[in-house]
Length: 222
Length: 222
DNA sequence: GCGAGGTGGCTAAGCGCATAGTCACTCGTA
DNA sequence: TACGAGTGACTATGCGCTTAGCCACCTCGC
Image 1 (cartoon, rainbow over the protein chains, first blue to last red):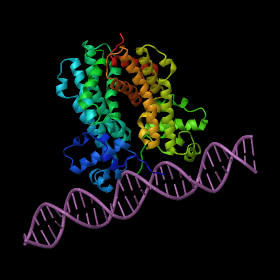
Image 2: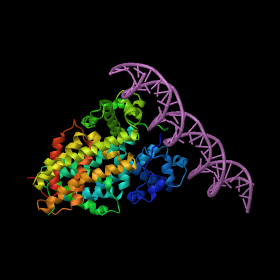
Image 3: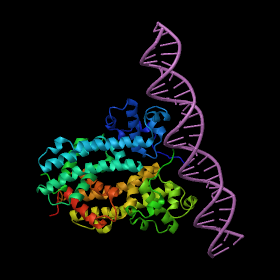
Image 4: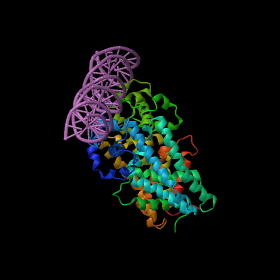
């Protein structure tokens, strides 16, 4: 049969504690309430079942509307996904380039701050973050390109933070590219397992991963 | 339109260097050659486009057969996915429980060995590993449960290796659960970006991540 | 105050299409 | 003759998206 056999329906998802996060506060303020609720429903569906296993019906069901209502607010299902992924990446970029982080003089402090900020964001918005990491290749080639651009800029701030500490002798002479990638991996992979009702708050996890990051650059916290 | 708009066709995928790995050597020997070639084609399609964006046509095209030929060898598309994911997880488990690893007496040596083995496997078979990590929730609930069981057993070997070193004083008094998860994250996330024609061989990456693992447990290599 | 006309959110119905899977059949080999 | 591999034509179904139109509410002239 051509059934897509998504394992979870919109009804299941509304109350699933694994899918509770701060994503609903994420959407652009100039969107209407219905649009924002559609995005929140879509992000839950995409996170649980994936873009291709989610139907426009599922998304609309999640806010109690008919399937056609989606098209009053968004021109296509793909553009719903793009809006989610674009907003997610822009918010992350805004967090890691925060002036208060870049103002930190000590290389260790700056690295700690950027790793913590990145991790906290991913934990706090882990449902959206999951879609941002896992559904990238459901985007059209053009939209995918735009997102890759945002990712490169975000990653650049990480690499700079590591390279700076290596250059000024705060860190050991590590391989900047590889170590940076490892730090990103830690925070990115959290979207697979994190839940807000688990043992760690976003802030605790941010601190923990900031500690780990400093160990990775050869400067363990005593 | 209902087009699934997979961005890459089977033709594109055959020669894509990003999708070259050792997966074709992975399949059970008791399967026929056509079955193994179908699995190799499917793994490429699933890795590039995802399970739901891959059609049975795509898989069959990859080995030059008609769509119906798939059903001569496999009862359903989902069972093709399950076979791939099951074999992948069984192979990983076999690697981390290798007697030569468990025979290592020193806690640091053992952790190094298990991290390297896990990482090398994921790098060498990164296309299959990608499917194993990213397409889990396209499985039926029953099949998903079987895989989770295998994952828990694999993760148990990691946790034991960390806990042992903490207990015997080789490592610092780290949070075993969190640190273990961080180590797994490093190797798992590599399926997102690794390619065999890149800068690192699987073995080099395995050594590098083994070094990082020891730093994470507070024992940097001098 | 009140009807005419417009507007925006929403829906029921359904179109066109592509999908997973089936089946009667052929072909090659033993 | 028997059988396993493979196929072309097909079915049943579900998909994204469109269309025509409903309805509550607004605006404006009088």
